[in-house]
Image 1 (tube, one colour):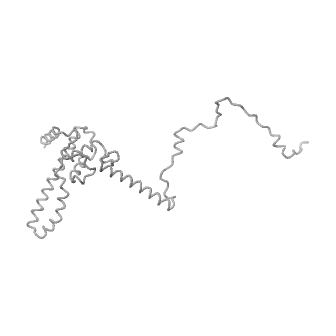
Image 2 (tube, one colour; image 1 turned 30 degrees about the vertical axis):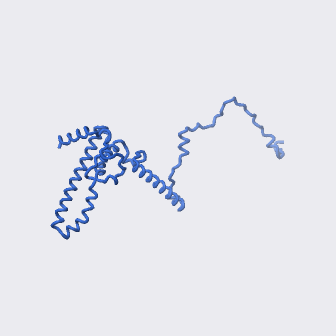
Image 3 (tube, helix red, strand yellow; image 1 turned 180 degrees about the vertical axis):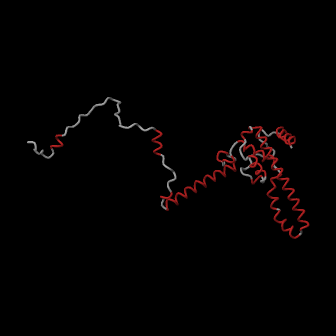
Length: 226
């Protein structure tokens, strides 16, 4: 009686089926764990764009390099186009900003004498040959060229200094970016067609904040403190 074997299939039939519990409408049963926040879900979905290159196959590395090169070329082309058209949204960071735009416009409108520095420097190459063959004549020509170079340096510095002082008066001294004076001075040593970003104003077309009266005020300040 106690060791009576049950017939096959009686285990399934003897198992009691739990009655279906009817839940009220709109009720959601507990999940046993708190619902994750949206930030946590988004963080889990994020994956690194650049995978571990050590685990890449040669084909994957080649494709990754090609994709990286294509992105770099696209960015470079976009920046160069912006440098030619004056579109500051796509310019490199060192050329962006209304203060730098003001300085560039002032230098381009000033037409500095220092812009002929590079063509004049090229003349030194044939003069070295003349100086070796005719030292008495070549020596004086070289001295004259060095004097011209010094005048160009002073002119370039003066134009850049005026651009900085006018920018300080127009925007405030605390708005002048680092390296502004050196950047404007370097721009003044290039011919107009060689400058990048390309000039957006004509000669004599000074920007707002660099009118004749304001330029004269800066000039008087220079003379007073020189």
